[in-house]
Length: 547
Image (tube, rainbow, N blue to C red; front, top):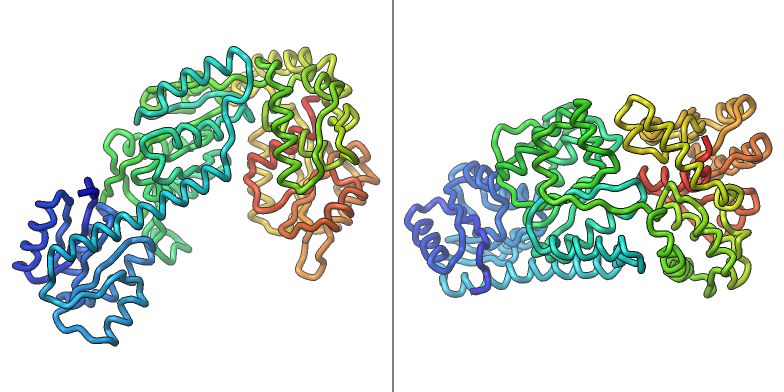
């Protein structure tokens, strides 16, 4: 049978029927959790999320349809077969509407039920496989694109470990492509047909990180109105990618260690442990060995996640790969934008190779995207490169070395582990949503920027009149009444801070808006929602590496 390791939840109050059905399914290679009531069924469900469920309609502490509704709210894709001794068309219709796959009347034909279970489980697995395949096709990027020796060595190393089920730690500077490599490792492993669930730990508070990772029960804290499964549950049988694990709150770290050691976790506000089977892929730009010495990262978790460690090289260590990378990015971005065919001139390629690329491949992509957007014909020349890549091209490497030496002399582990970060760049964030505004401020300040915030145009104007900013990040719509107040901020920023880079955030893009924004001097039009790390990458690419 093709259902090895499939787990079935059997909910039946009649002890004789329950024992007979469970015995039959186990003989045919299925794992069975048996429950006689709604409460026992929910407890079994919390301990092990099943692949399918056989559910009796009449139970001693409630109805099967009510239980079906509750469990479907947590696991919408769960295949369920309803069983009843007294069937009716009305009851069958209700069960199907609530999400049951089939409605059977007792006595049941066990061989037929076995075939039904097999078909349901295989259909659900095939659905997940198709989703994963579409995701792979959509996001397919070769993480080893290049001809350099360091990338050839990286490819050899990663291909040897991809098929293993061990934890992998990816280390490298910001923007080197650790996330792309994590996806590739998952897609080449034994869990490729299951989900890859990712979370960036940077900038998340302890409470928010716990809720996202482990989920919470209803009433666990103020505002927790309903049960929320965590990302760890979503990654069951698949892979969990924790980006920037070096920024994880120390209070959360032992809970992650428990998941790795015992394959168990507990939702916030719950008293029961749940079993989970995940492969962890972690990434960080920090030197975790230094963080352990400084007491910022637990040594036991560090030793546990560094079973297999892969160091992703920075772009400056593989300059010979830049022409191939740039050509690939030009072709891909032009296609995504629906633009004409474009190519880089030899002078532009030389300029790109002479730059130090402190933001690595992410910065290169942002530069190429801007160049494609601004190009008027098929040729992308040196003039389309950002100011940092032209004015600093001869001193780029020495400037990077100076930044590295400066950060190495500082006492903090965060500065030592992120040598390419510009020191004390001042930014203005303009957004009327307090959560977005403050979240961006906290995230960027942790990256070494000085950040001012404004919720309204008037406050932003007051800041712009007094401060010369390196970059201004403004939402297009700052109030319900005015759809384009962000453009007013952009105009004033360009007038008062001519050297400032302007980033416009919008949830509704159009060709007309792109044209208007470009005419007003907007440097980047960013579509929301966008991860904070990507916004930071755009900022970093635009303002360069000047202190």
